[in-house]
Length: 75
Image (cartoon, rainbow, N blue to C red; front, side, top):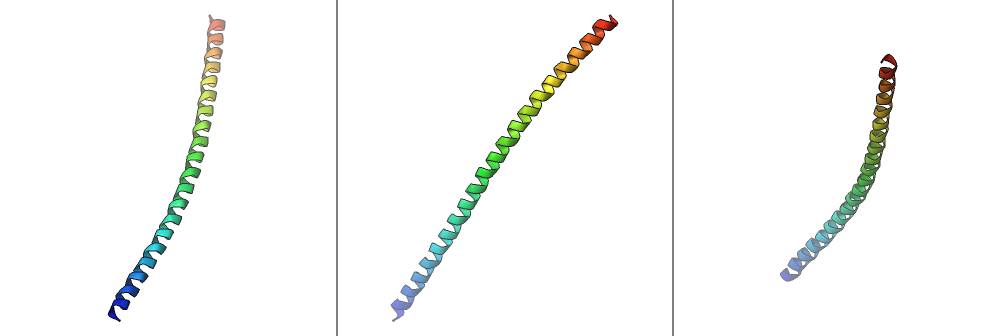
């Protein structure tokens, strides 16, 4: 009878461990999904930064061109 109690305790502990493992697997999957979403968001922001940097460089060229025209007019 005492062995049955130990066996019951062991069975209960194994069931708890299985439940904990399933919980951790679900949490891991959630974190993985969040990571994928964050990476995608980061990539979009990097693309936007690149686009704005290019636009800024073009504006700098336009300003330089305007200054050269002004300097040529003023002689």
